[in-house]
Length: 239
Length: 309
Image 1 (spheres, chains in turn green, orange):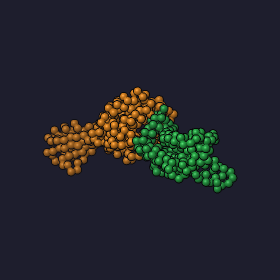
Image 2 (cartoon, helix red, strand yellow; image 1 turned 90 degrees about the horizontal axis):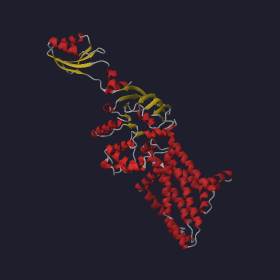
Image 3 (cartoon, chains in turn blue, yellow; image 1 turned 180 degrees about the vertical axis):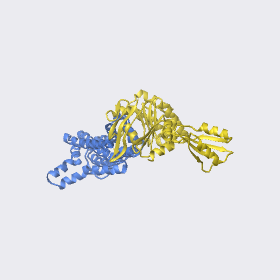
Image 4 (cartoon, rainbow over the protein chains, first blue to last red; image 1 turned 30 degrees about the vertical axis):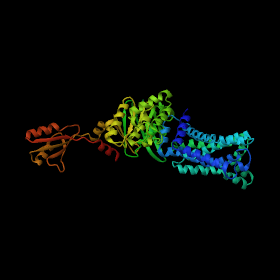
């Protein structure tokens, strides 16, 4: 499976370049610090739930994902390896999906490393297992959406910094701006913004309600990101 | 596996990079692709390797069209792009393994293939190093190894020896010649001596059009047509010699050579040679003929004449 060949190469390159370790340490460091030690942490809330962790991860992933996706295609565009890759017997889609998969795998590894949080909290009191599982699922779906956006941003530039900032710029609309707009604008426009706001969908999943409407929302953002990426790669042939 | 380029045109925006060119390369032939910068060499090569699609026309590799069956073309083609792009963070062996897996080489054969390529391309000492740590010459070998790993029938090499030292250039040329016996090879270069040494046939393009096609000798002949000799005659009055030479039937023009006393440049009539007549003249008059050198047009001159129009 060629998607897998691309995905494993990218994943190895994350670990070879230390990017993966930095991301894992920073992610666990931030989320651990705010979940256990500082501010409205678990001991302050005094509830056996990981709600605190999920709301921290909601922000840390928002910042980390563009940092992971920025090099995926921008670097290939810059060095020209994209030409080497696309003249091999592999389709544009396999390249795009392979790169998408590699970042998703890295995020799943990062989330898997927070399972000790879950075990710890489960020992502190009675815990809603369903809410924990849906919380993780919500994070994974949210990540898929942002990886799609990040990959698209990376495809249109050959500069990693531009790819990073562009991914943040697009993501921040979904992350917070649409939400803010939905409060300040009334009527049908307001409800459109409310639908587009990612936090609304994320909140309902992380509360334990998996609704197909939310899943479709996340997957369609990811899908549009990937379609856009593929279109940019194929653009070399439209004159 | 023949490559057939059929009325291929490629535009970038309104600008035509390649304008309606057609040529065929046969199996076992090494075609040298020459042209000034921006002539359209790289564009044509990118199209043959399916990276760019044609604006008009088509290219076929064997029975497969680059527009209809790009995947089949890619399986048959090995490509070394001009910039030789590689992943610097990967060790050589891992990189070759990655390329082999993309080519769908069966897992149990990958190891053998990699070692074969390391052997063929002379990468033995460097195989565990990261690509970014290699010298330019070794990177170029890695580039060749990735192009050859799936044993392609067609090899497209865009300036394969650029940036190499003279020893490496000779090695790579030998390698290309060896490989070229069974495969169809197109290589581009700025170095005319290299093309002459490696290629069976030369194609010169300029401003997106083919301006010459043939072997190095054919191109020279076509450009020159007439015999030009440099001779040196001593023990005689130059003006007498000059007049006597002019009288010969086969001679068209005679010139003194600048800064070289007793030297004359003689151009013969089309399809005639003046060598016999000159020798006879000298022996009749008892002149001392010390030098007679036929002047070959250099490929450089052919190239300049064709591409400066």
